[in-house]
Image (tube, rainbow, N blue to C red; front, side, top):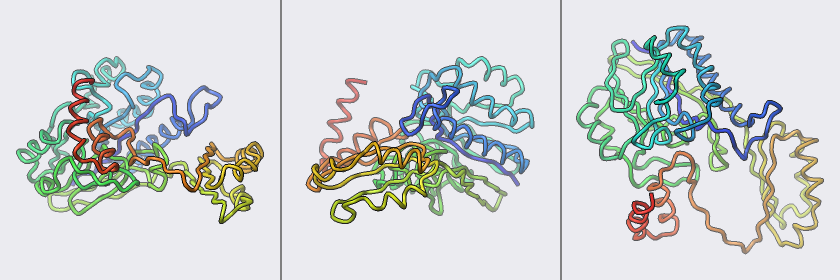
Length: 357
């Protein structure tokens, strides 16, 4: 039998518009993410789980500042002290195909001496207890498919890639490209990082990101997975890290012209990120004292952050399916063209990308 924890898509970064600057100078959403990674570490230690796997995108870019690296490594050090084996699978935000995030990190290299951390930069077969795994870093979908066809039979796959037919985000955009689902009939089961919305089928699962990236993910549960596997059986348990709540409320002129709902909101938004969308005529919207609303939400209600927008009934704005930190440039073009019902523009867009990137 083998037990291991899988988490990923942390996208640690110094700035985040959904957070606020704390007295120590850090962004509150960064602190949220670090706390939630800490929960996966604490869970691993508490349950004496011998393996901890990150399925990609630790940082939001390949050259994060030193203090951010140190903050992250400080969290995972107890795993090393306890003898837990750590695997970092390289995600698309961890590499530019020439270098990767961990190459120049002296502190991480020092940890290598204890053989505690393995950086997965190319497909790797490992055995955990009596269970075989195939770890796959980010690559082109056709390359990943070939690896799974050649090496995936009878193994549990953990990797960072898109899957055709998966939901990219809560905009309900379904991925057109990516690894075809029939390929994922070959392994015993597949755990994937890259898309932030948790979802699963009988053959594969997206664990999702450790924290919400934007309002497109406001209804997602965020967490990590504890996998228990034998040679004949696989069980997984999703552990919810209780990410900060994102509230989205529409104030519609014809339904709540005086915004009486505000009284109810004041008592329910403590610690939450709140977005208010006023939908109605501009003259109606301008009647409101926004400073007073901000005071009631932020000070009286003790909300964490507040965003206010205004739209008219007749306003038509382009709503592109969520293109967030998990999306590649190619995927972004596919999403936009699908939304605009211009499939003939996908190849043109990608060809332009090749010229400018």
